[in-house]
Length: 194
Image (cartoon, rainbow, N blue to C red; front, side):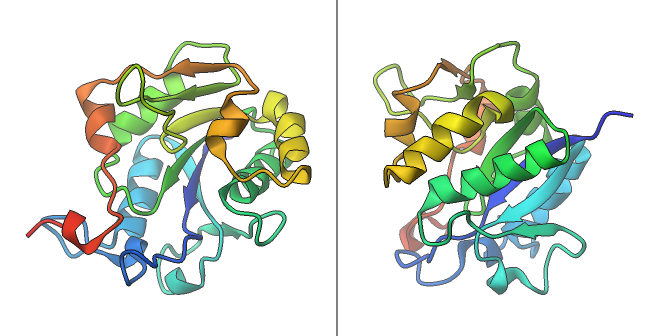
């Protein structure tokens, strides 16, 4: 039996701009916290969700979901990706999809599109426009082929997904309506629906 794909939900940000932990905010039209919704939707799409980063604020949520600390601690989001890749390899998964806890509109369909897109690239990531930066969340990562380049980037002190992506093969995930909606994230209080 093949293990389900890994869904790495990044929860380690400090939420300074928002002023509160973003994954605890409710999905529009419900009282369900974003983190709980992402776990549920990931399972609906056939993923095994894990929380990546400091999951302390979510200790009462996402029961039974594995928590992975950044590796190494304090090295930014690439350290979260490194922890998720190591877990994927340890559990014999060749790939994972990463999302962030401030993305309330990620659907099971969007996750399936990222996982199932036919490509042999090391990373499959969306772009909001041809000249826009890559979106590292809602991206699919080849755990085997990215492990060494990512470890090397971290050892050089790099923290930028864009710089990492410039050194590896990345293919664009088509920007379907489902993917475009899923990319909406909440960074500031004014991003929240009124």
